[in-house]
Image (cartoon, rainbow, N blue to C red; front, side):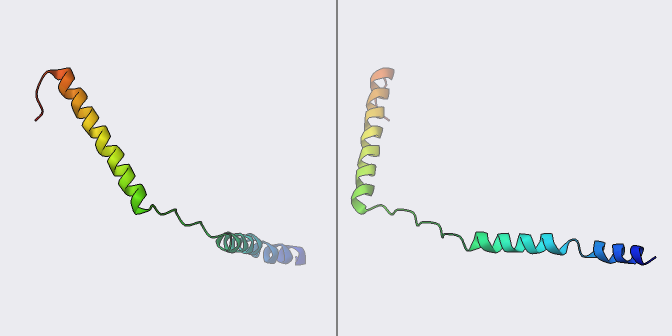
Length: 73
């Protein structure tokens, strides 16, 4: 009879250790190295990218006009 009572008491607390383990792992994950900030672009880089994109659009428009035989819209 006493072995049945001991078994019932032991089964009720089996979830404690996995829960403690999950809590410790989650705390460790949150305390890990913070993410690095993203690099910011300078005004010169933005201007350079915009100029390249504009040149590319002008080239595509020229190619479209030459290939289709229709004037620009």
